[in-house]
Amino acid sequence: MKLSKKVVLLGHFGVGKTSLFRRFMDNEFSEEYKVTLGVQIKKKLIQLPDGRELSMIIWDTEGHSISIEDTRKSYLLGSHAFIYVFDLTREETYATLTKDLEYLKENYIKVPARVLGNKLDLVNEKEIRRQLTEKNIPFDGLTSAKTNKNVESFFLDLAEEITK
Amino acid sequence: MEEQDKLKILKELLFTEEHEFADSIAQKVDDLAKIVHQKKELSHKVDPIIDDKLEEFVQEIPNTLGPTITETLREEIKNSQDAVVEALFPIIGKMIKKYIAHEMKLLSENISRKTKKAFSFRNWFRRTKAKVQGVSEGDLAIMDYAKPRLIQMFVIEKNSGILIADYSPLSEGTIDKEMVAGMLTAIKSFVEDAFEGGNQNLELIEYELYTIHIQNFYSYYVAAVISGAYTMMFKEVLEDQIIDFAKNNISSKDLENSTLFTKKLKKHFADEIV
Image 1 (cartoon, each protein chain N blue to C red):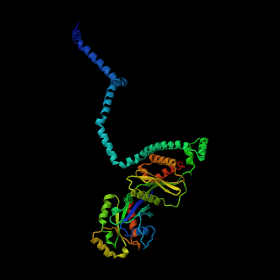
Image 2 (cartoon, chains in turn orange, yellow):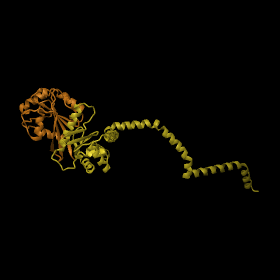
Image 3 (cartoon, rainbow over the protein chains, first blue to last red):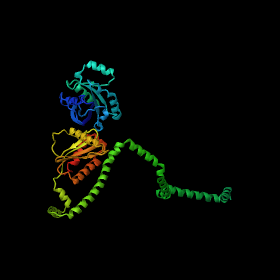
């Protein structure tokens, strides 16, 4: 039986959602920054460890400037998972993280939200981990779309989680 | 006369009344036994009583069972709202369509009356052709345009945009249908959100020679890609077919089973559309 899941990328402007999206989908990266208007959608077929095949439909939404509540609600409906991306080099992109996660939890009760700190290539991993822990910032992974560090494994882990 | 005979005579004298009484009781018991053991007899006696009681019971239902039934139904509907709405959606859709079709017929007749009055060579030619072929002038006018044709049909989950089933009478194209389903949903969501039309739904997308007919149901929608002239008449037929398909073939189980849904969709639409 066909297995399809919708995953939505969320986060502030310029945190690298589209870069992660392109890296995972097409294994591409570009230094050029283009603002995403509305949403772009792509599909990736993932072979699960149990032999099943998952069609992961990823919705790369345009970034929000203040709060996640600015994101078009209809884009979030029917999601099977959210990936909240923040920029490890810009504190303002995770300043509202706790509040945004609460909003998601309240409004999309059954949808798991995973937090990803991106642009790992621009920071010292050990140092940033210490800082995030100190500031009580929850995260599920640290990635670099540029160097492809942890990108594939993060999406594959998520694929397994949402198909359990 | 012996002692025993005397005693017997005395008994008869003393217990005559009791004998008669006992005999009448025995007779009554016999009659009752007959009534009880013979269905017809019993039915004759008991039926009027049961009828009275039943009538009384029926009259009392609204007061006795009514509140319990209402409460149970209310609870059931509350607990399975999605299933109830899913089942009612095509039926309500059909009712609304019938009403609109009736109104459209009146409008069409009105227009026909007015066009009859107008004269032109083209109208005269069409009228003559219509008479010869035995079809209405309006139908012929519509047939003047290119015939509409179903190119592809998608059944898409409303919120997630995930493709549930698809069908195309043409050969399989290279386009990724799952991505089309997602993008269609995103466009639909954008339009519905952007213009704040309350609970209104996007129903049509036109591009050059193609039209995407969108028909909304409770948890899913059907998008049919049509080439040629998307006329009101074709829209009517298509809408009816989609509603019939939804009403007769789709249950919440089917929505979860993409393979089965696709089979049903193919079977239903393979011979149906122009």
